[in-house]
Image: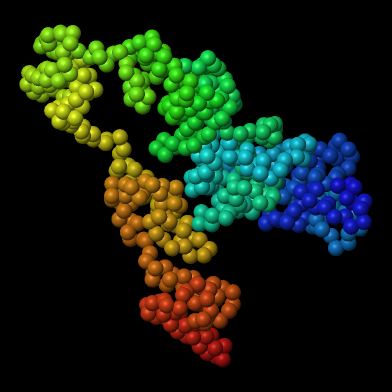
Length: 552
């Protein structure tokens, strides 16, 4: 900065000191803390302007939590060479009223302390998108974004507003609007195409519960499965349970919204599982096999054809489910030893005669007869209960005669569950109160906003609840039906607002001005046109009354 000041043109000074073009304005007058004045006088024998007190957004002293005062010394004087010292004349002590609630004052104090940390510490330089990457990692931790980086904007904005409050954000010139998807808060978690004011970064850090030191300490990326390399879970490979997997793709589960990792090893084995990993045991967990690879297939062929292991022994060797073994045996065209040994066994109270060379058709007939007899003996039993009584018969029929088994088994009965977990009456009263409060805020907006069910639901961050369960909340439903606006009603309210706005500006209320300010299309209805005519008549009557009164 000093080098830029010595240059002839002085370019870049504002950028270097952080004073960039922004909607957050620079203080007009120098500010001071009464307690700091007393300390400076006692310690140094004179007063001086404190740098931290002049930072935009710092309204209280970070050291004494006292509201800053400002008097008549302008920050930008007309005479650029004039020096105005801090003394008792320029810093008169006046006991001001306390305009803030304790919660707001506490937030302002914390924000001032954060700004003081920024000024007194040399932090490493970062590019713009580094900030977005860090914010995204923390938003995922707070479940305000998906593992793939999609932010739940409505919930994010709602929680941010609840944390600070709209009045506090207005005080710091950092308000946000739900209906504007280009507001600064939504933009700060997208790809950064511009710099954001440091004050707004401090608001983000405080909301996420991160200290400045921790935030700048190192690069953070969301790693639901930890840092690589990851374990290979191919039990047929020599490197089983060794960290050699270097390729990981992270996606999002549509049902649970949790991260799903797909791990691909150089041996051809590809598996996936749902995260995040919370322990070392989770790293050894395999959810689904997507590809087994040539090494695994070769090992399966050796176990089946050379060692001639049984089904479950083969499954244990390869650390997979027996159904997986059967599936790949069919794909590879293998002939396992155990399939020639599937003979009938004891079925309930019925014992089938064992024979060494019984044809398959005889097995089918005997197992069908045994299954039918078992159902006759247990007419009320379900398919699962019958399976437990005769596991061998069920297994044979399931493998070799599945279609007949499904046709000659009891039908599955779906249980009827009574959802008593939600007290809908209490929920109805709670949502109704929130909806009524949101209605007041929407109607008090500076510019009219159309009142619809979805608009009100988004304002209270309960869109899914109201869309799916409004019929279970009769009070809320009745209230919403009484206040929602059709297009015509909304246009009439915009026309009334436009007329009031023109009147406040001191402009004459004319029909073309009302139509333009209200943003009406040419094809507005006759009812809207009548309302515009009524407003014109009222305006004319008012002018006549004022004129007569003036003449009188």
